Image 1 (tube, one colour):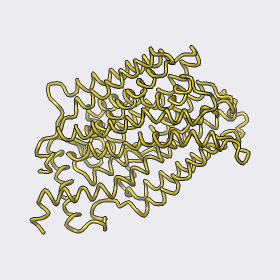
Image 2 (cartoon, helix red, strand yellow):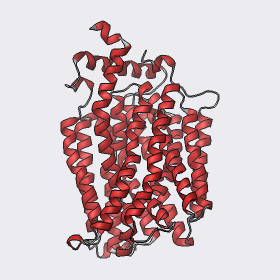
Image 3 (cartoon, one colour):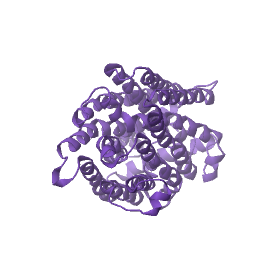
Image 4 (cartoon, one colour):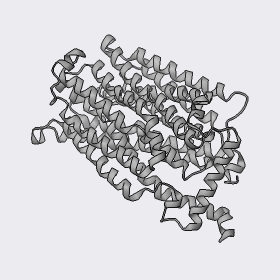
Length: 460
């Protein structure tokens, strides 16, 4: 068997087995996670009118999720490395599912002088508090999954694996958009509840149930995976350990502080920020953008069906780009080129107004560009960080980058409230994304960021 474990066929079969076991379940986990994060975009179409939320209130509330996410991301990821992925990911999913469901009671809490002191109505303050707490609860989930994948896959196999996992972002919207629209349209008034309340209830509870399943299905690492043979467990552990050793020899850090001392971590954090700010701005406002191209105010299902188009194309694009990056070993141009496609889309949104076809093309360019960027981007920080530095570095890049999720929706909300137009918001977002493109190229100047042919073949 020793000879077999060294054969490329055995190694390839083993990693296919690992992928088949982990990726579909993690895919489902991320779908329900992302739905609970962004379903507020659909709820806004009805909720804002019922609770008298302005565009500025909605934009700030949608984005404040990422403030809670920012402060608790790194501690959450480091804790996961200490206590184990299974328990911590289950904890994250159960708590965020309960909080997401609680949004159905946004106008049921009375804060008295507390809300007045902050200049808010009771409903506005509850909305802000729940969005902030949802960010706290979910903090660590995505970087935790990225870190978890480093326990199972070496660098050379990771870009495509991450891209496949992250197609859940697109699929959450492909599936969730029409489902969200249908819930709001056809359950509205059922049991005396508005459609947006049913939306939070129906889409929040699955996170709790799947969180319980995490305790049954996931293992903390290869050596605890009883569904692998001993030879398979040893092979995965050996290949991953060799990959980490190679990164260590290349100057990668092991300690938590090593991540913060590495200028590349800070540069990558801004690059990620430059993409995320545009992504969440468009994501949280997409139902509104689509409704404003001429859809009836109560036809939520049609809004959902049209929202499927950009996300469906984006799902295909990010897998193809991730596969291309893994096949060639090239990272720099895949990352920068994808983000540049999003720049073009954001620029189009600034000039096409409410024209239906150009708006849909622009939305497709933004979603496809940024999702392709994100899927390949995460091969960069994991290529040089190991150990606790990987846990802290990945979480730091993700948490700083995801602050863009606060500023993007808030920027659009404030500009819409002030000007009744989103034009300058999209121009600003395009400029920031272009900064990310240029920084990516600058950080990798004079060389192409690649994984060696030996690494792609699994030889360390």
